[in-house]
Length: 145
Image (tube, rainbow, N blue to C red; front, side, top):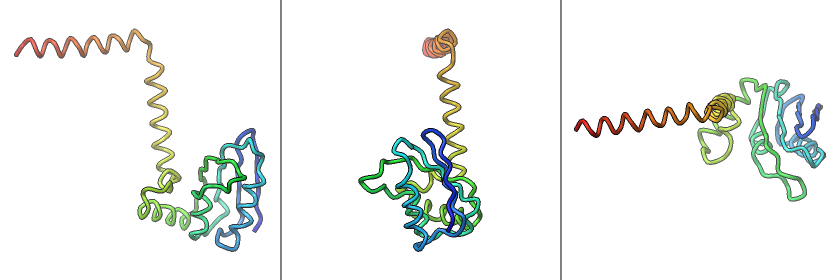
């Protein structure tokens, strides 16, 4: 298996070229272990990975060895078979982190982050007007009883 690694500041993109199984897992773990210590995020680009088995699932969610710093993992470019395996794992093991790696989870997370940014940027005057309007509506409803 060939592996391409691209490092940009504190993010690394790892592109495995071939199948991820128990025979290729040691090489991929060695690639992760060899990353600079300041890399905080690993993006697994699986565009050239037509197949993964449980070894691929372990690669994505298992904690690192003690001598390797923890890093946030994301996945992109999933072909149909790896996507099916990841969806099945997310369904069967909901307490593990498989679901957050799915493309729809990233889209949902991005939308939620966008809502937070939008809400956070509301001017204080608008926020207080909205609160005052809600309070006066509630007191009017209470007074009319």
